Length: 414
Image (cartoon, rainbow, N blue to C red; front, side, top):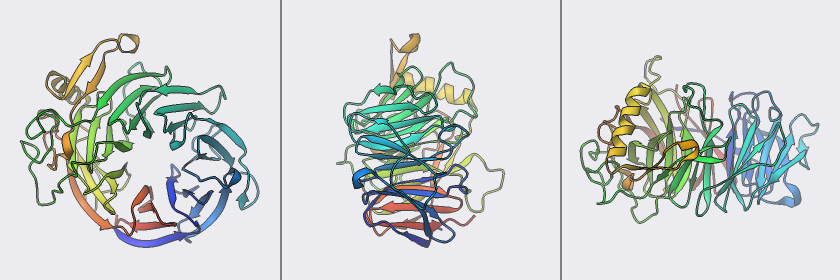
């Protein structure tokens, strides 16, 4: 199902990050490499169309392409060490040797950049455990979000298009090597909820949020892969569902989890990889053979340190909001979560526990045991020649950056 269909060659060192333009066409694909360059690619020809050089040849750790109609629309943003730079893609020349602007500095080395849907805000997650949120239009000092005890490895802005008003402003989620996710109101700089991703007490089994392949809703099917339980449940990757209601989390024990974006309540979990899961990505791909109106079956990609790329169908994430709210309320009454007072503006902050070990089952009742139907089922996979660092989707192509200097392309039949 995942068919190799090409390679992009032009970098001379390992590739750390990829980003695809929001429409998948106008700007195509960007890559950031340890060779000190960011490249733009034309997937049709397989050639690099432009190169942007980092100051003093420093390694490029992350890249995002501009979108929207604001100041980021014609830019590419790159992080090198703790500095974030912007390149104006309207500038002449195939090689841009200097950035147009220095956006700002983080506290420590930046691991990931993320851009809001409208292109107005840029977030930088760093090794000090902080997230800097830059207002690209106003140009004022960034909002700094202090929440993680160690490296903040991933950050993602929440889509707002299908969500009812909730009184919150700009929202994002961050995940760290402290095995926690934090849901932020970035407009105020305050956390809304925090989710601890440590295994549930008692080792899972039939416990809410527990794993281990046992218990109702967690039967170990023929495709079950035992999680590498000796690996910590660090958060390596985050991705919001298109409607912003759920978050996919790639974890260090090899598991993939789907969690409610508001409370962190566990919706489904799978043991996805035999080593750390490094990436989780909601896509716009359609499940082959699925009816055109099957919008409730979203397709996700995961990549892991076991050198494997896997494709998943997520079913039931389009459940009515009221049903999801009932599930969240049920989960906070049991072992899966706890409420603590004193959140911003009088709002209670939810600290969700559990998630245990990657569960291996399909999560067909929701991993909290009584929530809406949420299922994760495998669609296909392929072995990779090297450990993947990043995955991105452009049209029906899946682009994989790894520890080599090559971007590998895989085609998903549609």
